[in-house]
Length: 224
Image (cartoon, rainbow, N blue to C red; front, side):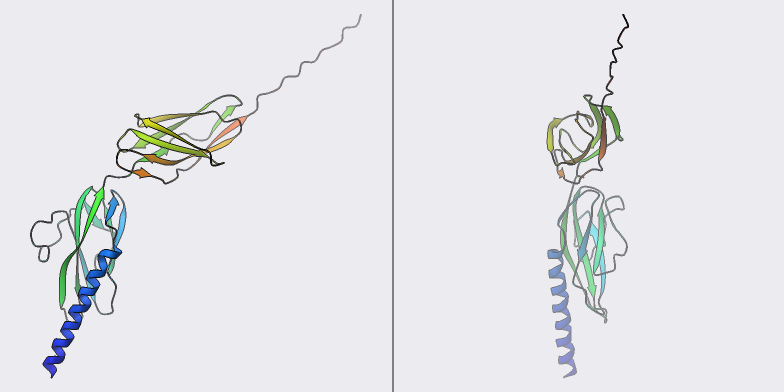
């Protein structure tokens, strides 16, 4: 009878481990961009321990092979010994991750549970110019630094929500010319290169429009 109970308990533990590992891919993000951090996770259970490993070379038997991702390719942010871990993906490429789940008795199951595609970093558009002052009727030039693979498409907006898109930009140091009639705040809403689209708003910049001075001409009467 004790042997039957031991076998039943072992089967239950194995089933639990399989369930935990099966749930992991559904909770993991399978495509990220270079420089991003993603979360890998299995369902935590009391008295279980976890060990995650990362692979940039998937040749061989990953069940027995230790993680081989280099520090300039992919790294854990914090602990790699929790049910939920974070990974910073530093280089484009295809990676694999494995978790070893062990129960309190030390019984464990190793499994290659996921594949992560890391794409080239999203493009960025950074406004280099500070706030500017112009006179009514003049234009202002906003300097923008672009990263990624050109040509780029750039969309910018004012605080009223008026959007304008410029396509086919080939210079990574782009000069945007604007001519507002009143003081206006501008910011970038989207930049697109040959690989991806970044929809994160940039910090805004002000163009302050000052009215031109009005000169009043006084005509003096001449005494006869």
